[in-house]
Image 1 (spheres, rainbow, N blue to C red):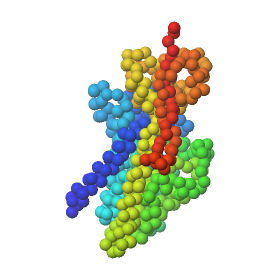
Image 2 (cartoon, rainbow, N blue to C red):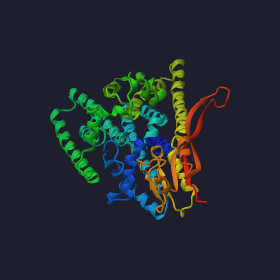
Image 3 (cartoon, rainbow, N blue to C red):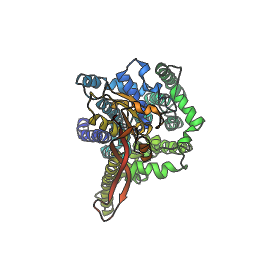
Image 4 (cartoon, rainbow, N blue to C red):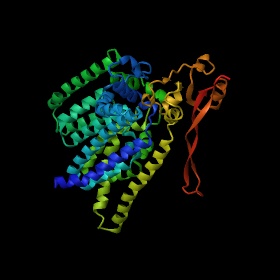
Length: 487
């Protein structure tokens, strides 16, 4: 029977992997929030122990981040990178490989979670859990994004699964590692699970200390040892991030939202039409225990004024599992009455609506990286043998440009941020990749001229008299400028 369940589950695993990779291929570029880990992976793979060439020395970011995540990804990708170097393939394919490796880790953790769900709640719940996760845009979209939250996500899911199966040693060890190395605020989410285990006497205090103390010491020693080498100073990155964001509350500089924002904005967008089925899942008393630390984490974390959807992305699979239990209750009672038949149609329909929403969101996101597209266009338009010295402005760097896109070794790439447009230094650049700002273009008309404009997402237009009624409007977002030749 176990073998039969594994065979029947393989299409669901294939679905999760396919959807995650589809999001990656349609949106292959990255935004500024992902840049540190992505650039770090590039530097580890290509510069290795030549730390002087590492990007973070010139662009350290607001707070330091750990190198452990990029280091693990680089190890996973190294065979593919070695092969691609033999084939002289563009570095851009390495960027896809790095992100795909992270996505596979997330999918593997989801698959591990569904196995435990299958064991405890049955195959219907496990299957619906996979379908629900695959239909959600944000979970699949972020699964390949090199953000600290996503590096933490697989570990959190495995830790949560260990807590479900009462494997306390693994749960405590993984919790200590992910909190100390990647995201300190997870002490709330995982700590609430730990508190439940202590209060229910499934875990003793001495047993907790037996696992927690060595796991905490080893995790702290590992991150300090590794990051001290890469940053060239004694450093515990996540400790500094915790101090900056939580104690000093400096994260508020990037915007604040009301206390209930996660509940009325982030969760509806993250779960889509699946959200109404979460309360229905509570008919199973076991689900109430799973939901308690989830809701407690979101409520507690809401006290921090600065909020982003990705900060609570760890809760999406848990809420999806609870919703899957509610959906299975309806489907398993399909034969009882017409109401259950109608409810079953709604269950199936909400998956299709989520998939449609994901498709539209993915299409919009595809047009949201004009900087990255500008870099590819530059390499497409100019021969490799051309003498190129290109400057990349901040807007372009924040919308898709990474070191993986620096494909020609004989070209020079510069991202310095202290340039003044009217400065004589502008003349030394053969090309500029910059925001398509009319005023800036006019100020450069004496030295440079537009070579190509790159369109990007502008807004969504609704016209009920057209088919389809919703369309994505594009506008010029970045421009490639070329130095004028002397006449």
